[in-house]
Length: 199
Image (cartoon, rainbow, N blue to C red; front, side, top):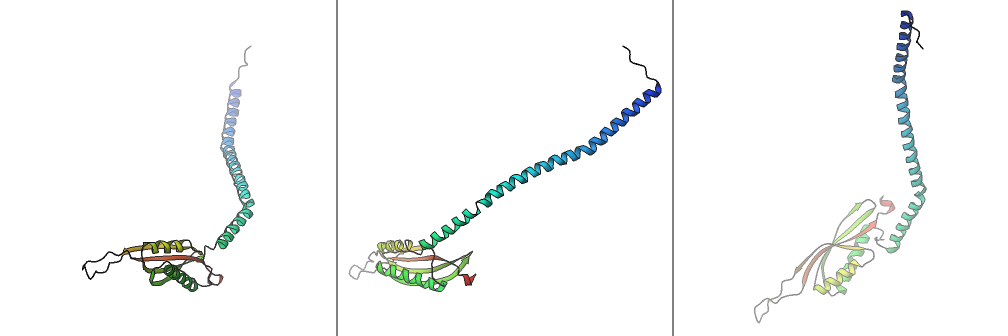
C-alpha cells in the first residue's frame, strides 16, 4: 500500500505543526520541570520535618521522667551531705577549719596555721578553700588525710606539699639526729550551693 503523496502546501503545514509541537514541548519542559523538581524537593523537606517533629515529640514525652530523675539525684546529693550546709561562706570556712584542727590534734599532730582563701563562685556553687600547715609523722599524716577525705560534707585535699623536718643536733655526738617529723602544707576544699539571696 502506497502512502499518499503530499503537495508542497500540505508539507509546509505538516512542518509548521511539527515545529509548533516541538516549541510547545520545549516550553512545557522548561516550565513544568522546575515545578516538578521543586515539588519533589518540598516533599523531601516535609518528610524530613515530619521525622524531626516525631523525634522532638518523643523527647518531650520523656521530659517529665528526666525532670523527676534530676530532682531525685539532687535529693540524693542533699541526703548524702556532699555539700556544705552552712548558711554563709564564712561559717562554712570556720566549720571546716575547726574540723581540720580537731582532726590534726586527735591524730597527735600539731597545727601550725590555717588561712581562709577567698571564696570563688562558679555556676551555682561556692568553693570554700583553706590553706593548712601542720607537723607530724607519717602515721599522723595518714590519719589526718583519711579523716578529711572521708568526712561529710565532702572535703578534698589539694596541692599537698610534704617535707621532712630537720633533726636536732645531739649534744653528745655533735651529729644531727634524723627526724621522722614532717612539715605538711595543703589546701582543703569544700563546696556549698549558693543561697537564694546570693543569686
